[in-house]
Amino acid sequence: MDRKGSFQVSLLALASSVIAGCSSHAIPTEDQALESSTTVSIRQVDDQGLKLPFETTFSARWNDANDGTKYEPCTAVGARQLAALGVDPASVEDAAGSNGQTLRGCDWDYLRVDGGSVRWSVSQFVGNSPSLEHDKRVKSAVTDVWLPDVLVKARVC
Image 1 (tube, rainbow, N blue to C red):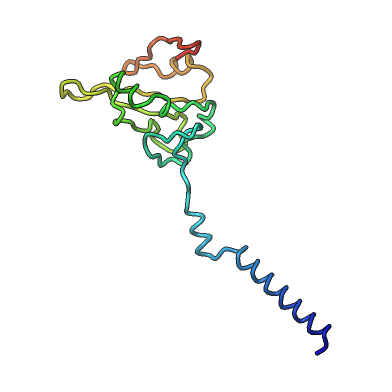
Image 2: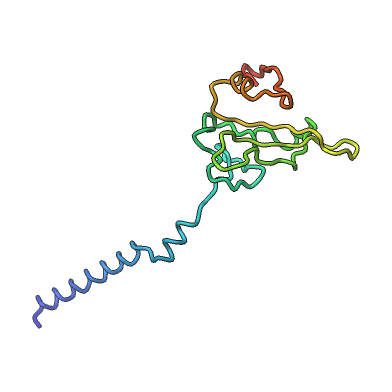
């Protein structure tokens, strides 16, 4: 074989190995495709990077029904502040009962006094709504009394 033929064979071999190398990495095997489709990373931090005080299993905890604010009720008040208010920081639970729920927030129990049973709890949550007044009117009931608005740093609470 002459030099020209030898060069063409070598070039063809190089091109074949490059194509084979690219194609073997570009197309996942069936096992790899199944593994990547079943692996779901569920967000565990707020918009400031603070870890939630519980592990959420809801992949749609943040969604179109509650993304109107970056404020995260579950990380806004620290454990010391909660305890100073008589709230048990260790009792924290996700306020949502299902994935993709309108509200996003937490429930806490008040600290037990003199070994008594817990009878009261407090919740803090957010959700997209026309107004707080609208929510109070819709959700008020005999067993769920909504207190009057409080103004804190020019914000209605």
